[in-house]
Image (cartoon, rainbow, N blue to C red; front, top):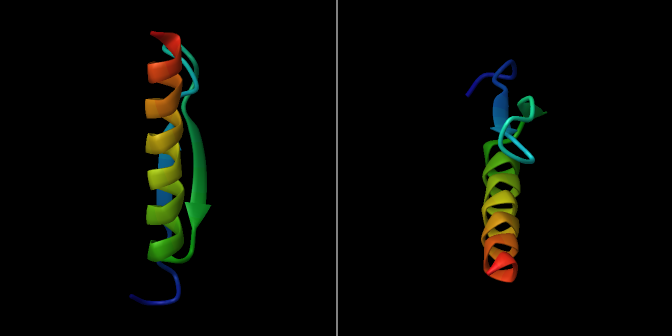
Length: 49
């Protein structure tokens, strides 16, 4: 990719919240952050049961 490429990860803390986003210049960093969000959400869902 060229040096101007940006990877954006968006999420909501809870239903009804505004979207939050974080921009990354590196695709691998964006994917790692996204995976951490998924794991955090999965853990929170299990704890809520």
